[in-house]
Amino acid sequence: MSRLRAGVSGCGARGALAAHLLRTSRDCTLAALQDPDAAALHALGTTTAVGNCHTDFQSLLQSGVDFVVLAGPCGDRLPQVQAAAEQGVHCLLHTPMAPDTATAQAMVACCEQAGVKLGVVVPAQADPRFDELRRLVREDFFGALVLVHATSAEDTVLQSPPPAAHWRRDPKRAGSGVLRQIGTEALHLVHWLCGRAPLRVTAQAAAGLSALPEDSAVATLRLRGGSLCTLAASHVASGNVLTLHGTDGMALVTDDQVLLRGRSPLNDRLFDYAQPGAVR
Image (tube, rainbow, N blue to C red; front, side, top):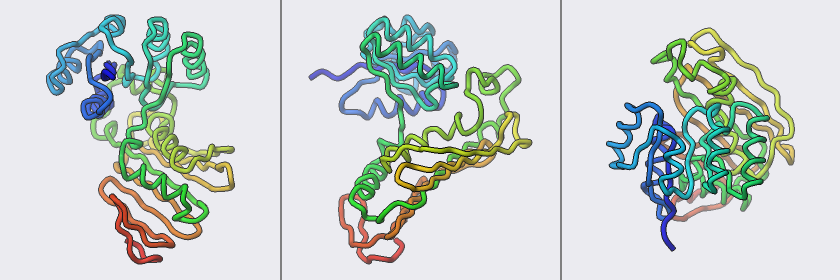
């Protein structure tokens, strides 16, 4: 079977990450890039050695791609999804999917009507560590899940404040609030790891240190089955952490390490855990 030809729209940091994942995929090839910003388009085209570059989205769709990864501002995506659906091109959306629920529903409706696939990109799902943790959750290595916590922190807007006209300062293009802007990927990851949908959510936010209306926010979720989850997101800190706490063990995952405590020994392709009850 021939490899699927992918196009990436949006050549910023998230587009660059999508391009990297596509270039290392066994099933897809990075065939084209698109961004209205010619400088960003040229930079990623040079880095990836992709010569099929477009400033116009319609031109990208007509370049022979099988699907597109939309990594630009989430508020710009509805017309892109509609155009792709009309031409039979499938869509993968980088988190956050959309700036609001109504826009997300409109995307789903037009793709269903056209018979094309619509999905959300969660890069952490490609990390073999999380794939293995998902298996351990399913096999009750940690016992019954009690508490889950995820922190997503990116201080780009603190270190380099966007100018007044920048899309990051427009809620209609960037999405409203820090949880939506950088915390939704963690929400998708938690749902995927635990297999439990959130039933109730409460949240609060703080501001005053960055150029954006919200600096940091925390949400508390009650998951199906009774587990509790907290999601924290911040524009004024840096680092990503995930913890899973169960009745028989725990896991802590940072960018460069995994700590485990479980009820039984474990020796597989990723984790070597020999002493039950110890943290390693």
